[in-house]
Amino acid sequence: LELAKDTLTRARKTAVEQGFEHIVFCPETMGKVNQLGNLTEVLELCKLDDTFLPTIDFRPDVINCNDWQTGPIPVFLDTFQDNPFYQGIKTVMTIHNLKFQGRWDFNKIKDAMGISDYYFTSDKLEFYKDANLLKGGMVYANKVSTVSSTYANEITTEEYGEGLHNLLRAR
Image (cartoon, rainbow, N blue to C red; front, side, top):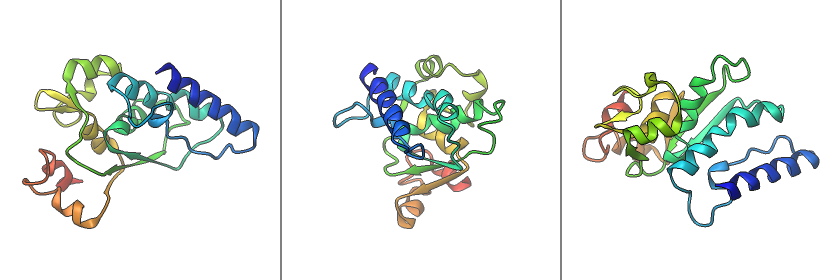
């Protein structure tokens, strides 16, 4: 985790120094080799957006989140809505493989995310007594997309929806 944070900090500084303030970083993969990290690392890196974006004077119109590793970002953005900087930023949650949902022990996610109990109900992050980061991202994202229209149709069925087909139909 420290390597990832250090790598991201150095990359930000270098980009700004060289006039590339518009560069969009993908922190969930920074500092990792062939993996995206464990739950603690993923949540810590998703939380960086709260402090990072205002300090570089970059306000995106849309943040495209990919799979469960970035599912917490739309949820965290909802918690930042008291900050005018974040108001109106849109998110898209893109699903590549619905089998990988970031499903973890309910209390572990709740403690690690450090956000209100409001977010941990069956219509938000709770999923069959666990917490589901992809579901949270899908609930709070402004739009949900997939890798193809065929896949989008498939995952709205009970057979391929991995327990999220009703949510996907509603979205």
